[in-house]
Image 1 (spheres, one colour):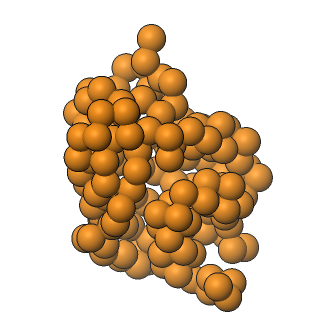
Image 2: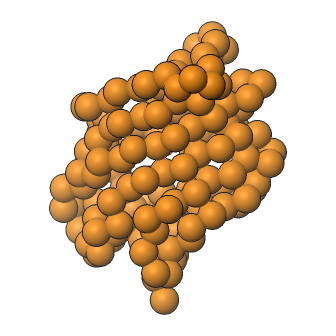
Image 3: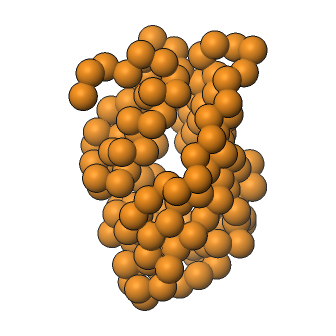
Length: 141
């Protein structure tokens, strides 16, 4: 694929990498000092990851727990900052451990600088991680 030319293109490419279970490729889209935040994270889950290595460690086992199949509802909205987008989406698939359906809605605010993600605030539904098999980050005590 050609190099993504806009934050929206880069984000769409990132979703394709997740569907392909290419976590190394997905992490490769991040700036070394990128920050990922989860403002609604429940107790025991990380709220802030600082740096590409922390993001990589968090995502490393994602495909072993959540088998994503599609992002059927994707809306990408440009902000007044041309490098920042607001994303509304839904991810569907199954939980690997139980085979149960996975269906999560998200809103994310993503900033891209010099072709890399520098900030990703992920407003996902914390109730969804109460299901068995969702703890890909080893967050539960």
